[in-house]
Image (cartoon, rainbow, N blue to C red; front, top):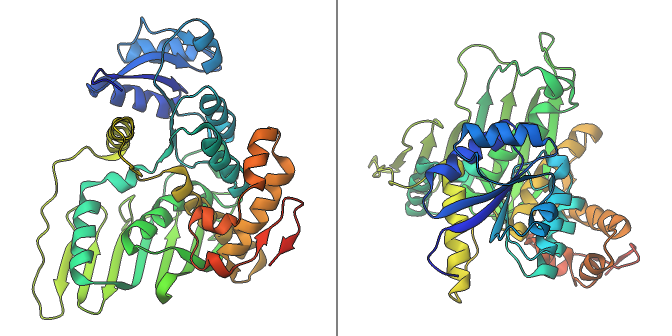
Length: 387
Protein backbone atom coordinates (compact mmCIF):
# COMPACT_ATOMS: atom_id res chain seq x y z
CA UNK A 1 0.00 0.00 0.00
CA UNK A 2 1.39 3.40 -1.00
CA UNK A 3 1.38 6.57 1.10
CA UNK A 4 -1.47 7.94 -1.01
CA UNK A 5 -4.78 8.53 0.81
CA UNK A 6 -6.79 5.36 1.45
CA UNK A 7 -9.71 5.25 -1.00
CA UNK A 8 -12.92 4.66 0.95
CA UNK A 9 -16.45 3.70 0.01
CA UNK A 10 -18.94 4.57 2.75
CA UNK A 11 -22.17 2.60 3.05
CA UNK A 12 -24.93 4.45 4.89
CA UNK A 13 -25.84 8.13 4.63
CA UNK A 14 -28.24 8.64 7.54
CA UNK A 15 -27.56 10.60 10.72
CA UNK A 16 -24.50 8.62 11.77
CA UNK A 17 -23.45 8.39 8.14
CA UNK A 18 -23.29 12.18 7.99
CA UNK A 19 -21.07 12.22 11.08
CA UNK A 20 -18.70 9.76 9.39
CA UNK A 21 -18.67 11.82 6.19
CA UNK A 22 -17.57 14.83 8.22
CA UNK A 23 -14.84 12.77 9.88
CA UNK A 24 -13.61 11.44 6.53
CA UNK A 25 -13.59 14.96 5.07
CA UNK A 26 -11.38 16.17 7.93
CA UNK A 27 -8.85 13.32 7.76
CA UNK A 28 -6.11 13.83 5.13
CA UNK A 29 -5.04 10.15 4.98
CA UNK A 30 -8.32 9.04 3.39
CA UNK A 31 -10.31 9.91 0.27
CA UNK A 32 -14.01 9.24 -0.25
CA UNK A 33 -14.48 7.64 -3.68
CA UNK A 34 -18.07 6.45 -3.36
CA UNK A 35 -21.19 6.67 -1.19
CA UNK A 36 -23.82 3.94 -0.94
CA UNK A 37 -27.36 4.10 0.42
CA UNK A 38 -30.62 2.41 -0.49
CA UNK A 39 -31.95 5.94 -0.96
CA UNK A 40 -29.78 7.63 -3.58
CA UNK A 41 -31.61 10.87 -2.79
CA UNK A 42 -30.49 10.67 0.86
CA UNK A 43 -26.95 9.85 -0.22
CA UNK A 44 -26.84 12.74 -2.71
CA UNK A 45 -28.01 15.22 -0.08
CA UNK A 46 -25.58 13.93 2.55
CA UNK A 47 -22.65 14.02 0.12
CA UNK A 48 -23.42 17.59 -0.92
CA UNK A 49 -23.69 18.73 2.71
CA UNK A 50 -20.17 17.48 3.45
CA UNK A 51 -18.50 18.75 0.27
CA UNK A 52 -18.63 15.46 -1.64
CA UNK A 53 -21.06 16.50 -4.38
CA UNK A 54 -18.88 14.96 -7.11
CA UNK A 55 -18.56 11.55 -5.43
CA UNK A 56 -20.29 8.64 -7.21
CA UNK A 57 -23.54 7.47 -5.58
CA UNK A 58 -24.98 3.96 -5.75
CA UNK A 59 -27.34 1.56 -3.98
CA UNK A 60 -24.66 -1.09 -3.32
CA UNK A 61 -20.91 -1.54 -3.15
CA UNK A 62 -21.11 -3.99 -6.06
CA UNK A 63 -22.79 -1.34 -8.20
CA UNK A 64 -19.94 1.09 -7.57
CA UNK A 65 -17.26 -1.50 -8.27
CA UNK A 66 -19.02 -2.61 -11.46
CA UNK A 67 -19.01 1.04 -12.56
CA UNK A 68 -15.22 1.10 -12.25
CA UNK A 69 -14.78 2.82 -8.90
CA UNK A 70 -11.40 1.84 -7.42
CA UNK A 71 -11.57 1.43 -3.64
CA UNK A 72 -9.20 0.27 -0.91
CA UNK A 73 -11.71 -0.21 1.92
CA UNK A 74 -15.32 0.13 3.06
CA UNK A 75 -16.77 2.05 6.00
CA UNK A 76 -20.09 0.45 7.01
CA UNK A 77 -22.44 2.92 8.72
CA UNK A 78 -25.69 1.12 8.01
CA UNK A 79 -28.28 0.05 10.60
CA UNK A 80 -27.22 -3.02 12.61
CA UNK A 81 -29.64 -5.28 10.71
CA UNK A 82 -27.68 -4.60 7.53
CA UNK A 83 -24.17 -5.05 8.95
CA UNK A 84 -23.91 -8.74 8.14
CA UNK A 85 -24.92 -8.41 4.48
CA UNK A 86 -22.80 -5.32 3.80
CA UNK A 87 -19.71 -6.64 5.57
CA UNK A 88 -19.94 -10.04 3.89
CA UNK A 89 -20.31 -8.49 0.44
CA UNK A 90 -17.38 -6.11 0.95
CA UNK A 91 -15.11 -8.83 2.32
CA UNK A 92 -16.02 -11.13 -0.57
CA UNK A 93 -15.01 -8.32 -2.93
CA UNK A 94 -11.57 -8.26 -1.29
CA UNK A 95 -12.11 -5.04 0.66
CA UNK A 96 -11.28 -4.55 4.36
CA UNK A 97 -14.13 -3.06 6.41
CA UNK A 98 -14.50 -0.62 9.27
CA UNK A 99 -17.97 -1.26 10.70
CA UNK A 100 -20.01 0.83 13.11
CA UNK A 101 -20.91 -0.86 16.39
CA UNK A 102 -22.53 -3.21 17.15
CA UNK A 103 -20.92 -5.74 14.85
CA UNK A 104 -24.31 -7.47 14.55
CA UNK A 105 -27.62 -7.91 16.33
CA UNK A 106 -26.71 -11.43 17.43
CA UNK A 107 -23.62 -13.41 18.36
CA UNK A 108 -24.51 -15.93 15.64
CA UNK A 109 -24.19 -13.24 12.97
CA UNK A 110 -20.94 -12.08 14.59
CA UNK A 111 -19.48 -15.57 14.25
CA UNK A 112 -20.53 -15.70 10.61
CA UNK A 113 -18.66 -12.45 10.02
CA UNK A 114 -15.57 -13.79 11.78
CA UNK A 115 -15.62 -16.72 9.36
CA UNK A 116 -16.20 -14.42 6.38
CA UNK A 117 -13.20 -12.31 7.40
CA UNK A 118 -11.04 -15.41 7.76
CA UNK A 119 -12.18 -16.64 4.35
CA UNK A 120 -11.36 -13.34 2.67
CA UNK A 121 -8.12 -12.69 4.53
CA UNK A 122 -9.25 -9.07 4.96
CA UNK A 123 -9.48 -6.94 8.09
CA UNK A 124 -12.92 -6.50 9.62
CA UNK A 125 -12.74 -3.95 12.43
CA UNK A 126 -15.57 -2.62 14.60
CA UNK A 127 -15.62 1.04 15.59
CA UNK A 128 -16.08 0.91 19.37
CA UNK A 129 -15.64 4.66 19.47
CA UNK A 130 -15.61 5.11 23.23
CA UNK A 131 -12.29 3.27 23.37
CA UNK A 132 -10.80 6.36 21.75
CA UNK A 133 -11.64 8.92 24.40
CA UNK A 134 -8.33 10.46 25.44
CA UNK A 135 -9.25 9.95 29.09
CA UNK A 136 -9.55 6.20 28.48
CA UNK A 137 -5.91 5.98 27.42
CA UNK A 138 -4.89 7.93 30.52
CA UNK A 139 -7.03 5.71 32.75
CA UNK A 140 -5.47 2.56 31.28
CA UNK A 141 -2.04 3.90 32.18
CA UNK A 142 -3.13 4.64 35.74
CA UNK A 143 -4.62 1.16 36.15
CA UNK A 144 -1.43 -0.40 34.84
CA UNK A 145 0.49 1.47 37.51
CA UNK A 146 -1.93 0.39 40.25
CA UNK A 147 -1.80 -3.28 39.35
CA UNK A 148 -4.49 -5.87 38.56
CA UNK A 149 -8.11 -4.73 38.90
CA UNK A 150 -10.13 -6.71 41.44
CA UNK A 151 -13.45 -4.90 41.03
CA UNK A 152 -14.96 -2.33 38.71
CA UNK A 153 -18.28 -0.54 38.59
CA UNK A 154 -20.08 1.77 36.20
CA UNK A 155 -23.11 3.90 37.03
CA UNK A 156 -25.05 5.16 34.03
CA UNK A 157 -28.10 7.37 34.48
CA UNK A 158 -29.61 9.42 31.67
CA UNK A 159 -33.12 10.47 30.62
CA UNK A 160 -33.19 10.80 26.81
CA UNK A 161 -36.48 11.12 24.96
CA UNK A 162 -35.52 9.59 21.63
CA UNK A 163 -38.88 8.71 20.17
CA UNK A 164 -38.96 6.13 17.41
CA UNK A 165 -37.77 2.52 17.59
CA UNK A 166 -35.96 2.78 20.94
CA UNK A 167 -39.21 3.58 22.72
CA UNK A 168 -40.62 0.22 21.60
CA UNK A 169 -37.59 -2.03 22.17
CA UNK A 170 -37.93 -4.75 24.85
CA UNK A 171 -34.55 -3.89 26.43
CA UNK A 172 -33.54 -0.45 25.09
CA UNK A 173 -30.80 0.26 27.63
CA UNK A 174 -29.14 -3.15 27.39
CA UNK A 175 -29.39 -3.58 23.62
CA UNK A 176 -28.86 -0.05 22.34
CA UNK A 177 -26.52 1.49 24.92
CA UNK A 178 -24.84 -0.88 27.35
CA UNK A 179 -22.48 -2.40 24.77
CA UNK A 180 -20.42 0.79 25.10
CA UNK A 181 -19.86 0.30 28.83
CA UNK A 182 -19.54 -3.48 28.57
CA UNK A 183 -16.86 -3.14 25.88
CA UNK A 184 -15.02 -0.49 27.89
CA UNK A 185 -15.04 -2.79 30.91
CA UNK A 186 -13.25 -5.48 28.89
CA UNK A 187 -10.64 -2.96 27.75
CA UNK A 188 -10.04 -1.28 31.11
CA UNK A 189 -10.11 -4.40 33.30
CA UNK A 190 -7.98 -6.36 30.86
CA UNK A 191 -9.79 -9.70 31.19
CA UNK A 192 -12.77 -11.39 29.59
CA UNK A 193 -16.30 -12.05 30.90
CA UNK A 194 -17.27 -15.55 32.00
CA UNK A 195 -20.77 -15.18 33.48
CA UNK A 196 -23.50 -12.62 34.18
CA UNK A 197 -26.57 -12.05 36.31
CA UNK A 198 -28.94 -9.29 35.22
CA UNK A 199 -32.12 -7.87 36.65
CA UNK A 200 -33.84 -5.50 34.25
CA UNK A 201 -36.91 -3.44 35.09
CA UNK A 202 -38.98 -0.47 33.97
CA UNK A 203 -39.78 2.29 36.49
CA UNK A 204 -43.43 3.29 36.75
CA UNK A 205 -42.71 6.70 35.22
CA UNK A 206 -40.79 5.29 32.24
CA UNK A 207 -41.69 6.50 28.75
CA UNK A 208 -40.26 3.30 27.24
CA UNK A 209 -42.36 0.24 26.44
CA UNK A 210 -39.56 -2.15 27.42
CA UNK A 211 -37.20 -2.32 30.38
CA UNK A 212 -35.19 0.90 30.45
CA UNK A 213 -33.16 0.11 33.56
CA UNK A 214 -30.92 -2.74 34.67
CA UNK A 215 -28.56 -3.92 37.39
CA UNK A 216 -25.93 -6.25 35.95
CA UNK A 217 -23.13 -8.22 37.60
CA UNK A 218 -20.43 -9.79 35.43
CA UNK A 219 -17.73 -12.17 36.54
CA UNK A 220 -14.55 -11.91 34.51
CA UNK A 221 -11.34 -13.91 34.38
CA UNK A 222 -9.24 -14.07 37.56
CA UNK A 223 -12.37 -13.58 39.67
CA UNK A 224 -12.84 -9.90 38.78
CA UNK A 225 -16.35 -8.48 39.31
CA UNK A 226 -17.82 -5.76 37.11
CA UNK A 227 -21.15 -4.18 38.02
CA UNK A 228 -23.27 -1.99 35.78
CA UNK A 229 -26.15 -0.04 37.29
CA UNK A 230 -28.02 2.01 34.73
CA UNK A 231 -31.22 3.65 33.56
CA UNK A 232 -32.43 5.55 30.52
CA UNK A 233 -35.32 7.12 32.43
CA UNK A 234 -33.43 8.80 35.30
CA UNK A 235 -34.12 12.55 35.14
CA UNK A 236 -31.97 14.74 37.37
CA UNK A 237 -28.32 14.46 38.48
CA UNK A 238 -27.47 12.56 35.31
CA UNK A 239 -24.12 10.91 34.65
CA UNK A 240 -21.93 11.28 31.60
CA UNK A 241 -22.91 9.34 28.48
CA UNK A 242 -19.74 7.36 29.21
CA UNK A 243 -20.92 6.53 32.72
CA UNK A 244 -19.31 7.09 36.11
CA UNK A 245 -16.56 4.53 36.86
CA UNK A 246 -14.63 3.21 39.86
CA UNK A 247 -11.84 0.61 39.87
CA UNK A 248 -10.45 -1.14 42.94
CA UNK A 249 -6.95 -2.60 43.14
CA UNK A 250 -4.69 -3.73 45.99
CA UNK A 251 -2.50 -0.65 45.50
CA UNK A 252 -5.19 2.01 45.19
CA UNK A 253 -8.30 3.28 43.42
CA UNK A 254 -9.05 4.96 40.11
CA UNK A 255 -12.22 6.86 39.19
CA UNK A 256 -13.53 8.48 36.02
CA UNK A 257 -16.62 10.64 35.71
CA UNK A 258 -16.79 9.93 31.98
CA UNK A 259 -16.12 13.49 30.84
CA UNK A 260 -12.95 14.76 32.47
CA UNK A 261 -9.50 13.42 33.30
CA UNK A 262 -9.57 10.31 35.50
CA UNK A 263 -8.40 10.45 39.11
CA UNK A 264 -6.17 7.74 40.59
CA UNK A 265 -4.70 7.53 44.06
CA UNK A 266 -2.39 4.95 45.60
CA UNK A 267 -2.96 3.30 48.95
CA UNK A 268 -0.55 5.78 50.55
CA UNK A 269 -2.39 8.81 49.18
CA UNK A 270 -0.23 9.65 46.14
CA UNK A 271 -2.12 11.01 43.12
CA UNK A 272 -1.04 9.54 39.78
CA UNK A 273 -0.48 11.78 36.71
CA UNK A 274 -3.55 12.39 34.54
CA UNK A 275 -2.30 14.10 31.40
CA UNK A 276 -4.53 13.53 28.37
CA UNK A 277 -2.78 12.54 25.11
CA UNK A 278 -3.20 14.60 21.97
CA UNK A 279 -4.83 11.89 19.82
CA UNK A 280 -7.93 11.61 17.63
CA UNK A 281 -11.05 10.86 19.64
CA UNK A 282 -14.21 8.83 19.08
CA UNK A 283 -14.90 7.84 15.45
CA UNK A 284 -11.89 9.87 14.29
CA UNK A 285 -9.79 7.61 16.51
CA UNK A 286 -11.38 4.51 14.99
CA UNK A 287 -10.68 5.74 11.48
CA UNK A 288 -7.07 6.64 12.32
CA UNK A 289 -6.39 3.20 13.79
CA UNK A 290 -8.07 1.47 10.84
CA UNK A 291 -5.86 3.31 8.35
CA UNK A 292 -2.71 2.79 10.45
CA UNK A 293 -3.45 -0.93 10.75
CA UNK A 294 -3.94 -1.40 7.01
CA UNK A 295 -0.68 0.42 6.29
CA UNK A 296 1.19 -1.62 8.91
CA UNK A 297 -0.18 -4.89 7.58
CA UNK A 298 0.75 -3.88 4.03
CA UNK A 299 4.30 -3.41 5.34
CA UNK A 300 4.30 -6.95 6.73
CA UNK A 301 3.64 -6.11 10.38
CA UNK A 302 1.34 -8.32 12.46
CA UNK A 303 -1.02 -5.75 13.98
CA UNK A 304 -4.35 -6.34 15.73
CA UNK A 305 -6.38 -3.15 16.21
CA UNK A 306 -9.05 -2.40 18.77
CA UNK A 307 -12.32 -3.89 17.57
CA UNK A 308 -10.79 -6.54 15.28
CA UNK A 309 -13.67 -8.91 14.58
CA UNK A 310 -12.37 -11.88 16.59
CA UNK A 311 -11.78 -9.66 19.62
CA UNK A 312 -15.12 -7.87 19.40
CA UNK A 313 -17.51 -10.82 19.56
CA UNK A 314 -17.48 -11.00 23.36
CA UNK A 315 -18.76 -7.42 23.66
CA UNK A 316 -21.88 -8.44 21.72
CA UNK A 317 -22.03 -11.68 23.73
CA UNK A 318 -22.11 -9.68 26.97
CA UNK A 319 -25.26 -7.92 25.78
CA UNK A 320 -26.89 -11.13 24.59
CA UNK A 321 -26.01 -12.92 27.85
CA UNK A 322 -27.35 -10.05 29.98
CA UNK A 323 -30.65 -10.08 28.07
CA UNK A 324 -30.91 -13.86 28.46
CA UNK A 325 -30.31 -13.52 32.20
CA UNK A 326 -32.96 -10.79 32.42
CA UNK A 327 -35.44 -13.00 30.60
CA UNK A 328 -34.76 -16.14 32.65
CA UNK A 329 -33.84 -14.67 36.01
CA UNK A 330 -30.81 -16.97 36.03
CA UNK A 331 -27.05 -16.55 35.99
CA UNK A 332 -25.83 -17.10 32.42
CA UNK A 333 -22.45 -18.44 31.30
CA UNK A 334 -20.86 -16.59 28.38
CA UNK A 335 -19.60 -19.92 27.01
CA UNK A 336 -23.20 -21.16 26.75
CA UNK A 337 -24.22 -18.08 24.79
CA UNK A 338 -21.31 -18.44 22.36
CA UNK A 339 -21.84 -22.20 21.87
CA UNK A 340 -25.56 -21.72 21.24
CA UNK A 341 -24.75 -18.96 18.76
CA UNK A 342 -22.29 -21.24 16.98
CA UNK A 343 -25.00 -23.84 16.46
CA UNK A 344 -27.29 -21.18 14.98
CA UNK A 345 -24.52 -19.83 12.77
CA UNK A 346 -23.84 -23.30 11.36
CA UNK A 347 -27.54 -23.89 10.79
CA UNK A 348 -28.31 -20.57 9.12
CA UNK A 349 -25.17 -19.67 7.15
CA UNK A 350 -26.09 -19.53 3.45
CA UNK A 351 -22.62 -19.22 1.95
CA UNK A 352 -21.15 -22.76 1.81
CA UNK A 353 -17.60 -21.40 1.85
CA UNK A 354 -18.23 -19.42 5.04
CA UNK A 355 -19.98 -22.40 6.60
CA UNK A 356 -16.95 -24.55 5.79
CA UNK A 357 -14.76 -22.12 7.72
CA UNK A 358 -17.19 -22.18 10.66
CA UNK A 359 -17.26 -25.99 10.67
CA UNK A 360 -13.46 -26.12 10.57
CA UNK A 361 -12.97 -24.37 13.90
CA UNK A 362 -11.66 -26.69 16.61
CA UNK A 363 -13.24 -24.57 19.36
CA UNK A 364 -15.42 -21.51 18.83
CA UNK A 365 -14.53 -20.40 22.36
CA UNK A 366 -10.85 -20.27 21.45
CA UNK A 367 -11.72 -18.33 18.30
CA UNK A 368 -13.35 -15.53 20.30
CA UNK A 369 -10.79 -15.66 23.14
CA UNK A 370 -13.04 -16.82 25.96
CA UNK A 371 -11.18 -17.79 29.17
CA UNK A 372 -10.91 -21.52 29.78
CA UNK A 373 -11.75 -22.29 26.16
CA UNK A 374 -9.23 -25.10 26.03
CA UNK A 375 -11.22 -27.22 28.49
CA UNK A 376 -14.71 -26.26 27.28
CA UNK A 377 -16.85 -28.38 24.98
CA UNK A 378 -16.87 -27.60 21.30
CA UNK A 379 -19.74 -27.91 18.88
CA UNK A 380 -19.58 -30.26 15.95
CA UNK A 381 -20.57 -29.18 12.42
CA UNK A 382 -23.80 -31.16 12.87
CA UNK A 383 -24.71 -28.89 15.75
CA UNK A 384 -24.41 -31.44 18.58
CA UNK A 385 -22.18 -30.81 21.55
CA UNK A 386 -19.09 -32.92 22.02
CA UNK A 387 -16.18 -33.03 24.45
